[in-house]
Image (cartoon, rainbow, N blue to C red; front, side, top):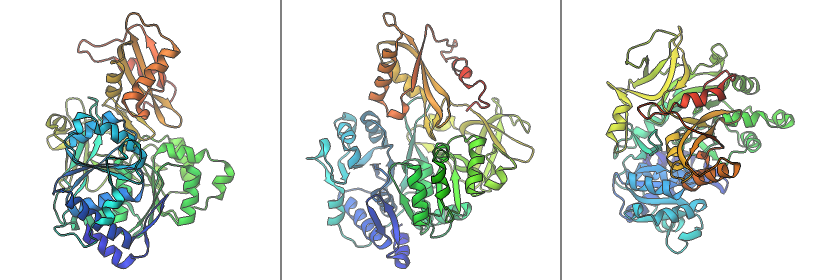
Length: 522
């Protein structure tokens, strides 16, 4: 990848590659800083195939680390910056991280994780920025590390890439490894992947991408890293601000952006005068996915921005599976489009038999290019997500007579709030550890802005009484152990939670009343 960045820098040297809240990084600067970072990390002893955990906000260093992984043949785990120390420590141990690179914003979380015995094998802790917090006297400065290293083009360049962690129904996050990332292979493969991606989505060559969500998310990573490696410019902010995004699109000539439905809603809620002042003539392509989008919201965005608002279906495991462009969606509202040319899809019933057109079943997919996925060090979970060479994300849907895919439900137990996957089993496990909780059920209920919000229903142990104070205490308890976005927004109390003989909760009976009259089930 150094060869790729160097070749772009040769023609676009003084043009901006990265624009963050701290300033502009030109292509020449990105090329030199990437070289220095590769040589620095190799000087620390990192070898081909080693793993680096990266807990960083949307800033240039995030992309420098990933660019460096393409020189040094390393796997980079982008860490969710909302995680607490317990979650970070688990992933550091599970991934076998040889180094942790942490943004100064999150240094206290990293310091707590470093004290956890599970991270003892991680030798290098590097802080982006001024540091501070508990790590002030015991860390390596990212900037000093880069400045002291050689700017020479690294030797033995080989491709690395990301391993995204996604939680699951067991409550333990799992690293997703794709066969597209082949450690040590020539960086030309990454150039080919990036070019194919931008061509498939019609993204302008050398365009300007706005990064509007956390780059640790696989979709945001793909929609920014690949356009960058195709020679584009990335404009990024750490937090999404609807008004600011509109201003930056106009001021910097942004050509493409990836959004989630919650961001659509916040854009639509802006004052009329702000919306009218938005020119938007530079925008060519707007993509959204990661969560269901209501037809009403989608129509309003199409009316405002025109038929450049496109939708896809996919996931970390399978990548992009289907796509529908804005003008086509108007004739097929609610559709997720047809499968991409590179993908086969089929709908199967619980007995793994094909279902008729218009009948719902589990969605299975297979890449025609031969790519596949596995869960890091978890062959059982990998096997559960596969069937005779086909993979699944656990979603339920159907094809209409024209071959368009429609989503109808999720087979796996999951909440999607603001485009973020939240797994109830993880939250239930924390709740039942509280002395007041005998049993707990967590599920998603409708939320006009976020799509879904997390609801907890709790059965109390003897000696405890339901109250608003206890509900607040349980929510705070979850926040102590998990990232804040996973905490229930509300808690209901019941005398007894009904379970099947197998022990499985009758969660549907709890969940369904909240969705009555909404016209949707997810």
